[in-house]
Length: 97
Image (tube, rainbow, N blue to C red):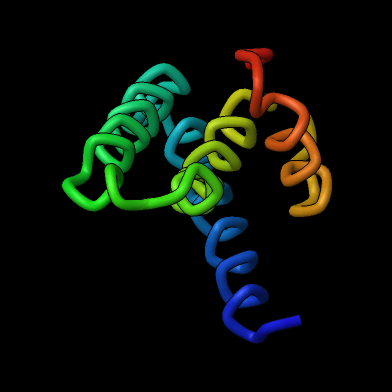
C-alpha cells in the first residue's frame, strides 16, 4: 500500500477523534460538525476543477469528507478506518446517514 494512503488514513482518524472531543467538551455539536462537513463536500464538488475530474476522482476527493461524516454520526465506540471506509462505499449511492 502507498505510504501516502496510510498517512491519510491516520489523518482521517485523527480528525475524527478531534471532532469527538469537540462534541464531548460541548464546543461544537454533532450538527455543527455535520454542517461544516456538508459545506466542505459542496465546496469540493463545486470547485473549478470538479468539472474536469472523472466521477471516480470526484469520489476520491469527497471520500475523507464522507468518512468523517459517518464517524461524526456514530455515537458509540469509534469505528476502525476499514469499517468507516466500507460504510462510505455502502452509502455512496444513497443517503443512509
